[in-house]
Amino acid sequence: MKLARVLLMLGLGCLLVRALGAEGVLPPAGSPPSPDEVLFNGPMLHFVLTVPPQDLAILSENRGREAGQESAHGTVVVGSNIFNEVRLQLKGSGSFRGLGYRPSWTLKFKNSAPCFGLTKLHLNNSVHDPARLNEMLGGELHRQAGVPSPRATPVRVTFNGRDLGVYVLKEGFDQRFLARHFPDPSGNLYDPSWGEDINARLEIDSGPDRRPRPGGAVAGTAAEAPQTDREQLRAATLVPVEQRLAALSSRLDMDRFLTTMALQLLTDDWDGYVRHRNNFRLYHDPATDRMVFLPHGMDHLFSAPRSRLYWPEITGIVAAKLMAVPGISDRLRGRMEELGRTVFAETNVLALVDRTEARLLSGLAGRPEREREFYRNQGALLRERIRERIAWCRSEPPTSSKAPFAGTAILADWKPWAEVPDTDLEKRVRPDGQAVLFIAAHSPATCASWRTRLRLPAGNYRFEGEVATRGVRLVPEARDPGVGLRVVPARRGIGLSGTVGDTPMSHDFRVDHATEVVFVAELSGHAGSVEFLRDSLRVVRLADP
Image (cartoon, rainbow, N blue to C red; front, side):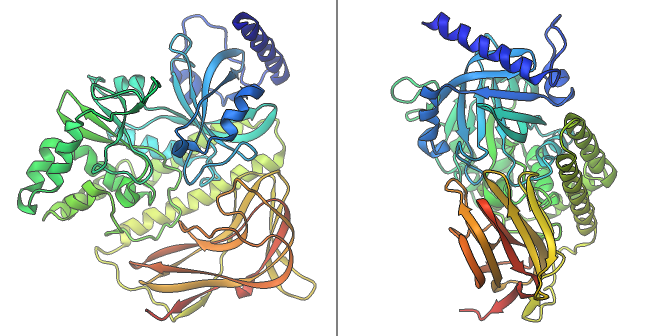
């Protein structure tokens, strides 16, 4: 039976390769090519995922990490290369999407049949980064600054015959990753769940404290392991502030951590460890007996270029405790200024964007011009935000003054934002003379929006406006289905659907520090359209409670 299944998968893979034609076909094997040659520097590849019906049921019931990431098995075809018995898992928290949408994937290949030298890869739907460039950019900036971070690259993904479009492929954190960056890869590698920090017992992916889950699963939580290295780091954050720097320096790779803090602030990475205690791994380096924070999940860069720099909200325990030490803010500011002259210099950052975008557009040769134009436009918007952020970082004073705000403002300068190219976003004028921001859904699962930014002082606010919808059908798997208003990163819940005339909507929010706020007027649906009345979209300051 096993032989028959393998032959069936091989036959299916061969048919898929013939259907793909020359796209993504790799040169014949002599000596095995390196991951850099094939995945990260070569032509953009096409990953074709095939999951048999009996395994689809496993995935359809899986809600990601919260459900233990149940695995299915399938075949992955990349050009002329066929990988069988690959373990597939759905992944993501805020970016989680179900099978009927554009899910993110973790692929685990057999050690005996790695994918161009790698056994763990992620295929990210990049719902927060329409240009598909931020992950590559953030990772490369960290590596240039000496901080280990996974490599990433754009790829095209097809799942069970359905074209899912352009994804971001990223290498996983595993022994191969550790061996590339550390002389001794045998230490504990901690994998926090969403919202977990060093004060929690963390899952261990590899290392001496790793323990299997009950039932003998391959990976799991070290229920009885001491996690001494993590506990020692936590203890160092709790000593009196006068001794804290020495304590932390003995348990933490301080130089790399300050570099990560500086880059996350410079790039406006609000979803990283420093500001959101999210998107990180923690490695105990046996060679130095210190802990190293490893950043990833950098799709949220540059969304608010004028966000507060000195200093935004800091929630990561290590970062917050370190910032309370006298003199550390000056040291961090010095690191930011140094990076601004080198790694974060405008010429370097834009060159990295140009290089990755060129590979992406080259990989879309032969695709509809609408798709290529979509990515060119999104790349141009990203460059605009990068230039604005770099200029802001050079000019913002150490303590930001209150932004002038009269209590109410009509929001203007709206920019289009869409997860996939097959979406209409237009500025229109209705027959009644009303200017509107129009969105129409054409793909089975559309999430698109109009966005603008405004700097606000601390306070309570209401984002309000009027909308009209026509034939909007909800996407059950979407994070915020229907039509609605919100600010980043807030959620709004279920919005309007169906067909309604001009209807008022509002979203209340609070700003704790003077900063730039991103406003979102969005549609998430299988079909339909929406008109946001442009002159009605405004922000109003509310009375403090």
